[in-house]
Length: 298
Image (tube, rainbow, N blue to C red; front, side, top):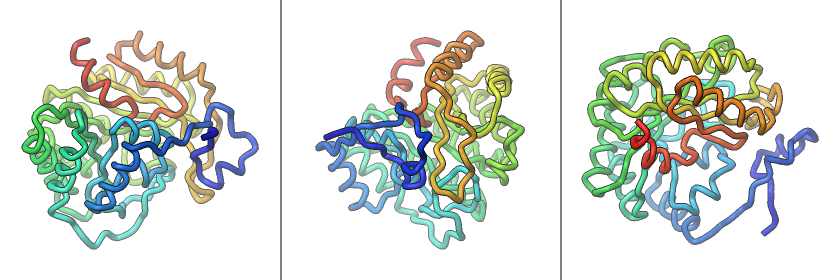
């Protein structure tokens, strides 16, 4: 099948779309199996909700990022395509369903994330904790990575997840401090940095991510890298921001692949254990490889 753009109609109309955003559509056996299973178990994936350009590669490799706590988010981030609104339901059987999917697919690495549920006492942290427990009850050697929200900075909520000792604890900064008001209006840079610091204090392999192309400067990215090194964060992902719809934040610029390569080198020379950097990189891109190999490097 010829290469196609896996992008939104608004992005496809853009005449300035760089050549390097062409991805190959591959609806193979694993892709179809995972798609059928998520529909059967009524599971959400961030791969679909966020229209990730790597869905074909990851699903064919048997990797998916499951999204807990429904499909409606309580925050209005300027970059995100997940539905905004007032959630009305909480599926208490979700941890079991996710664990069943992980076991059926015989995954060696599971990535778990969620929408924000600020109306809940602990932001849904209990569901994260139970999901980790259920996966480990169902499988013997599957590593578990969680990509958590900030739980409004509540230490007791974060501790519910940390106490389960996920193999990787991820929480995305998303952008540089100067752009938080536009990009993450209901979050703060310092709060997110604190989440990552708590993870490192708990002894966990810790991960975060930034989107580039929102108007940040390279010096600002380096400053974030320095902040991450101070708290001991291990893994940083850097990828190009893509505008989901015309209602979302515009793309300030397309970052050249060579700049991503340079930032990877800079970050690792500064002291980060690993920087996954490229236009199509997203939080869970090559997550299994990171979980398997990075502890050896430490």
